[in-house]
View 1 (cartoon, rainbow, N blue to C red):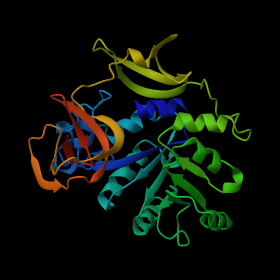
View 2: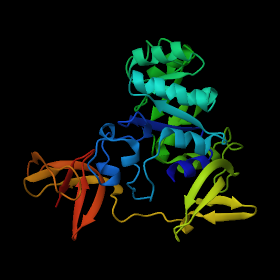
View 3: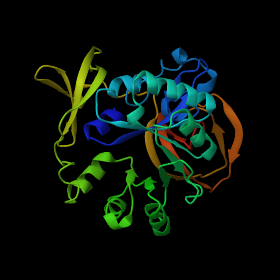
Length: 326
């Protein structure tokens, strides 16, 4: 649903993190383990895809294969920014890109210069992005990306005809600063595309491309699940007054609120900081069946990224397959 909303907001790119299953299927997942998002302690690389996509997250969605994502959005205008994790992943990724004729709609990214050089040699028509590292040594990469702004970096990259991308730009103040031409930023990666579109709409240079209230529909291709359990095919998605709609038949649009969009079992994405009252054991899933053997000190502070209510108590995810309870 997050990707549908982003496509409805007419973002330029979807950024996809990849993992590979035991049967060599590329799936879209930031984490190597399913615990934080799906509430089950399973490493993706250790199981075949058919044993992973049976689990449902908080939005009532199963794990998506990269091929399913390509199929869903192949008729839209959105592009894909993808980080392959290794040589085998790169080979599988390039095969899928070729299969769906997406060479002109993909931007490859990596922290490894060697991996990007390999990608450029195999598919020179696909541009690449160097993540962090030395911005003065980009080799064949067209873009450089990091998570903090530097005027010195921006000036150097602009002088050498390289693009400068910033990730983690999630506040309005940041967005307003970096969309200014004098900042020298080529692109912004954000968790809040609608917020960014609103900022762009207020800027005369972008106003004709971004509408703050209503967006033209965009093509997709895939099923949606209704509250009554029925699956229906949707071929368009659009945003109107910050509400997501799906086109399912001529002149019939279904509101996102009519979908089955919650799962009580799965953890809820939520961030914050917790201070431990006492020495606390770390478990590998929110059911607390498997102790990791690690303990955290009393009065220590930890960031959390998901929560789950269990028997009146709150379980906190500290990243990956690390869970504690208070």
